Length: 152
Image (tube, rainbow, N blue to C red; front, side):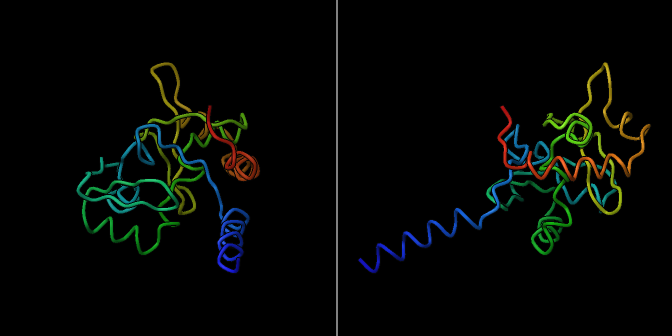
């Protein structure tokens, strides 16, 4: 009985205290498999390799080098894209999740923001044309509820 209660307590604690974030893993990895550290270190997105990968917060990340993998492991929150890797503009302006083009990005205030892009429009351009500080505040507010909802 004591063992059952311990297991039940641990299960309930894990459910209550774990943060369940819906990350954009459309291609199996956060940032479509691009190396999230490369945006900061190399100043451009570089595709990751299966040779250098890790799991963090229940999702997979790929890296272009062992050095970048280790940098991520030392400080993952520094490199994880905002809003679970969904389009920052869509989260802020539309209060919805939208997939991204991993090559459309901006680093602002030390944070990585990713954006949707098609041949018709670029949400990065829309983001930069508006009051970015206001969009960041809206995105942060919207993400508090969106992060727990799975993308359909």
